[in-house]
Image (cartoon, one colour):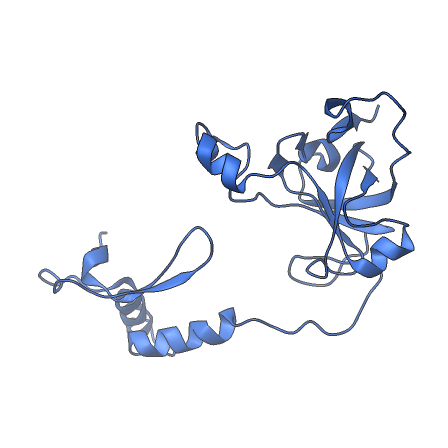
Length: 215
C-alpha cells in the first residue's frame, strides 16, 4: 500500500546541515489532494490501531524532539567507557571507539580537493586529560594505540569531549583505516602509550600516522 505523504515543499519541520546546524523548514505551498505530512500519517495510523503517539500537531512533535536532542550534562566518572546505549561495557584498560567524520577518505568525499584542504584532517587519537596524564601523553605528542588486531602510531589530541577511559580514532582518515584496529567492529579493548622518541634523520613522511597489523 502507498500512503499519500506530502512533498518536502509542502511540510513544516526542521532540517540539519552537514555541520549539525538546525534550520526551520516552512511549507511553500499547500498539500495536493489528500496528501499529509509524514508525522500526521503515522499519528493517524496509531490512532486507528488504538494507540496514541502523544502528539497532535507539528508543534507537539517538535517540543518532544527538543527535549530528546537537548545537550546533556555528564556526571560521574569511570575508568573505562562505552559510548553506545545500554549497560556500560568494560572492555579493558581503555575502550577504543570510532565513527566516520564528515570529511574523510570515503566515497562521498572523492574529488572534493578544496573541501579536504579546508576541513580534512590526518588520522589522530583523542583522549581525556586525566587519561592522558595517567598514560604520560600530551596534546600534540604521539602515541601507540594497540589492540588485538594491530597497532597504530598517531598524533594525540587531549580533550574533555572524550569520556574517561575512552580513546577515539576516526574511522577512515588519511594515514589510517580504523578497521585495522577494530576488525569490523566499532569498539574494542585497547592500550595506549607514548610513542618512542623519533630517531635522528627520520623524514616527516616517515613519522606520519602509520599502522601495523598484528599477526
